[in-house]
Length: 221
Image (cartoon, rainbow, N blue to C red; front, side):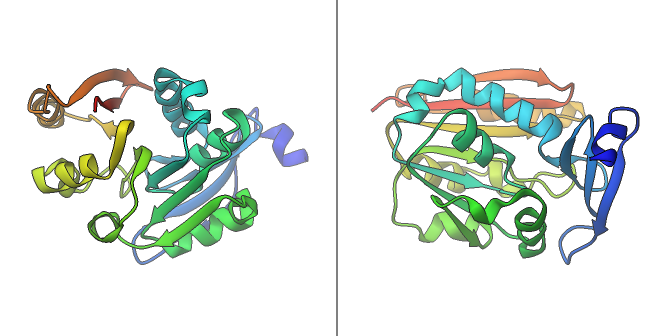
């Protein structure tokens, strides 16, 4: 409790480790809440939770609460899962895919991710998972980073087509991206401009927390 109180004055790190995929995994008390960070980015809770909450609100909390199955690609500490369950009161199934088992261990210990009964965690590369899954989803949340870097496959045509195929009619994709330079800005513009207009409605929510841009995609039929 003392650390929580003092964290309003200065961040207090309570855990630090590394994994085969992350140079640094840090759990810190900041402004009265626990957050999960990498070396240079917020992975869960804190700013990331605020960013994804804006995207979910854009889709509509009531609409999400009525859904049956949500896929989360990139779980980390699970802050978006907590938003779905605690704030939106989503009662359906959540499948979370995370490549780094060490991060899930930290999330279970410090954020009680394993106490959420409707959450099924799959330790696997997101690309491999979407190739194999036979399920269809009402909402697919894509939040995949290695520190501040996004894997190139997220923007490749094959992956985009597969994600769209896995989406139910009138379903949504919420894609969290980071723009740190003009090359990445052009990348996002290209991604949006080349989307299939007759099948999907696509919109962006730019410059959230300075560097993040959310892409919201709705399947029309």
